[in-house]
Length: 140
Image (cartoon, rainbow, N blue to C red; front, side, top):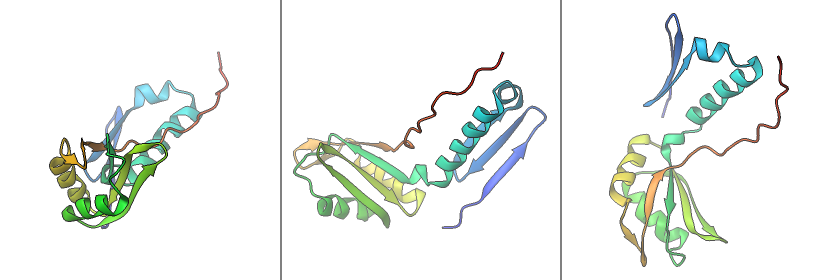
């Protein structure tokens, strides 16, 4: 899949659009932030969009008896996956990444609140991992 990033600028804001993800930065808001923090926030948003964040799903309340192969069989009904990872210790959750966004959306619609094994799973879009930001110097 070829992805294209669009940048649309207005007098007070600019918008980064990637697939169906849109991030907006207000010039008045971002100009008041220290430059280092502003650039980090903008690069974090770009990284999340380019990592295919919408194509990555989180499965919670997963029955510990459900194996990776069983989950792969279920999720591959909706399209090609890049990866399927099932937690073992502690168990009870998994991540699935799809090649195509529309396949992830279909999986989300079909498998959220469905029984897999002995439990009803919750399925949602995975969030990008939190980055440690450390301490920024304060300026008066």
